[in-house]
Image (cartoon, rainbow, N blue to C red; front, top):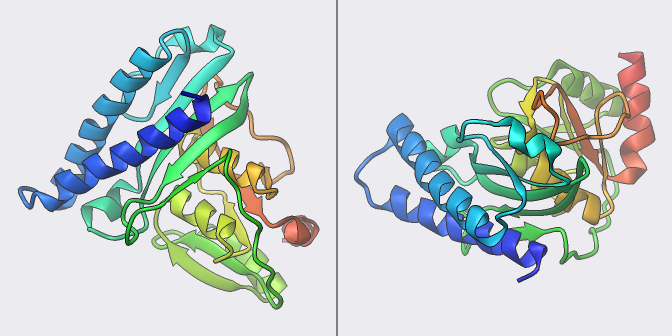
Length: 244
């Protein structure tokens, strides 16, 4: 099984497990989110350690170790991206499975199990981005939209689309439902590695909001900001940021 097939299979299977946990009706709310995180994480880490025992591993839900720092290949996973949305039985949550090679988000799969029929977007199977004219649509946090995103939207005459998880927002750009995802409220590597791998494969611009590259498998896993957008909007976004 190729790395890309493995990432997609694991993201899809973890998504099915999460739906089973949710649909059991035994728990809800925050307890459901916690149960989903723990259950999906156990599956993913055991599967990866079995399938790719020589690779490093970084998961939001597991204790980090320094071992991964000496590895060229590191799997970076988020068992439930958007735990709050998952616990609220919304659709805008995701499962992230990515492989960073020498610090670059190289292979990724983002599952959106809450959508009808489920959906897995992957870095090795891409489709053309749909054409669209008019002002840009910006996906932002449904609870705490970034000030920089609000400023960019105002300067570009853009429309704000509140949404849950980072994966759901990034995949909205990949699917042509939005043009810009700008986040400056702080994230961690597992929030963006798989989305960045998929978005890059689709030809989207992916960087920090100062234009510097996204670098993964760092000792400090905190990533302050992120920009994923269609390339035709990149210059305008950076210009708006500089003016803001």
